[in-house]
Image 1 (spheres, rainbow, N blue to C red):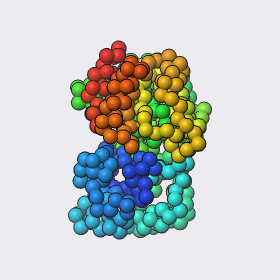
Image 2 (cartoon, one colour):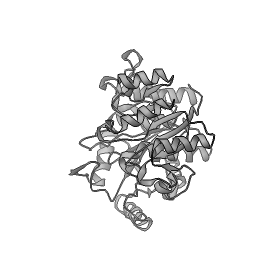
Image 3 (cartoon, rainbow, N blue to C red):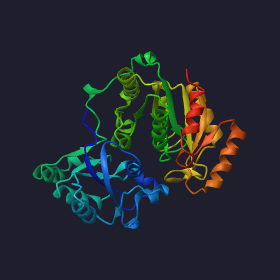
Image 4 (spheres, rainbow, N blue to C red):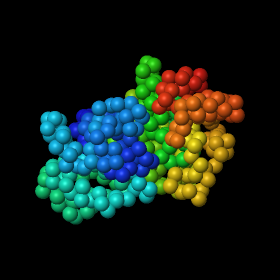
Length: 357
């Protein structure tokens, strides 16, 4: 395991910050142990504080128009930039054509490049040559491990006696990972040992110790890799709680996800993340999101476990509207509902503790 943090990062998020396509950058701005985040690049919000733009809370991470400005600002502040991290998460995970020139500039500035996209930059001959010439590395986080490194489901998950919590969602890019991290941190603050099982490239970039990249795994090994990650976290750390980061959603036509986490991760309870103001599946306006009641039922029928709380993504909502929705969900579904970004996660943790073994 590498020592964290690994270096000082400039996060590239041109034309995507504060949108669903910028969720990797959002995660790094909110929390990461892998890097010290120096700045974000997005010309739309240049001159502003990234935390203020994202969560209305300043965090001292400035936004710049381009790499030249971000790099020079870091050098002038004697912060020694070491990494250029692609914070984009576009539909399909493809590299925007305009980004390649920026990646080349980063390599020429002797910055290591980390990418979580499906387009593998390390296989581009020009970029590979530039990296070698400048003695830096390109890491493609979504690159599939070789088959001899993968695990097949064995049933050893049944040995795990930590409480396992799955944080699933009703759509993609809806805040599952952020909620999962906030639960982990709140549990730790309450005096419990808790580990996150990261299932996407952003969680890995945030430093999740037990991480798999679910959407790039060979299908035969998905269940085994989930089991292995959960079992390893339990065996090595002996935590009171293990939190599974969800991917996609059970009923999303483009990004169906969650079944393997329920089947192989064997959670004790499920928390469901939902965006009440979102009417269509992310990026697919012709596909109406299934009602929350149906999503809850699908989770509970498949897993045989209870959804114990709903967590709210407040996009396009006011605090007053969120509070009203939380009251409505308590009446409609007899489930407590929380917006952890606005309410914090302490009350959610109290709900979780009611179901602890």
